[in-house]
Length: 179
Image 1 (cartoon, rainbow, N blue to C red):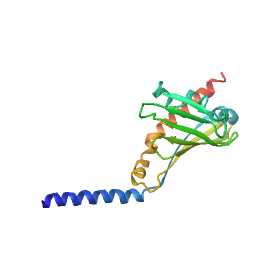
Image 2: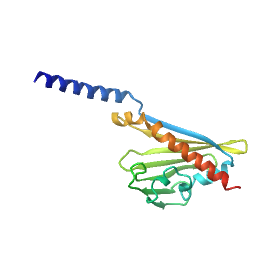
Image 3: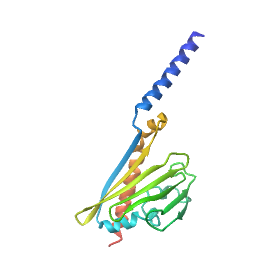
Image 4: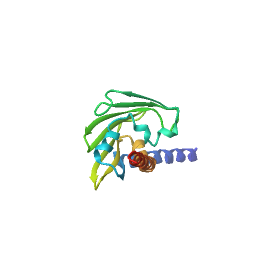
């Protein structure tokens, strides 16, 4: 019986340690990647300010060709929205809505993933020579949930490669359009 009590105490202590450390972890996660696209900011902005061509460069589109996409609201700018439904766990289901649109400078979207807290994605455009420096960022708030905060530690490794792939595909798509 003493062995059982000691094991139970150790398990409770470990759980409390996990929770306490989790509460000390950052409440917010930020991930970003960048690329330079050999196109002017106005052209890059036009591609990002609408979801109608999102799947031309999306890193997730090819993962589930059977996903269903629907578009709501205006075709571009604030209020433009895209819903997707997928049975693939790495694509999931959700909605993305443009909540801020500053011509040729920035597009901010609200991401709503099924069963998770909302997040934000930001596209920051800066002229660079004849092209555009594009920074794609992701921000998530974890609140007081220690498990969410632990998970936030892995976002850069989970999302970063997808952002790199998407930016490379966007660059190739945009630069190919002019040739």
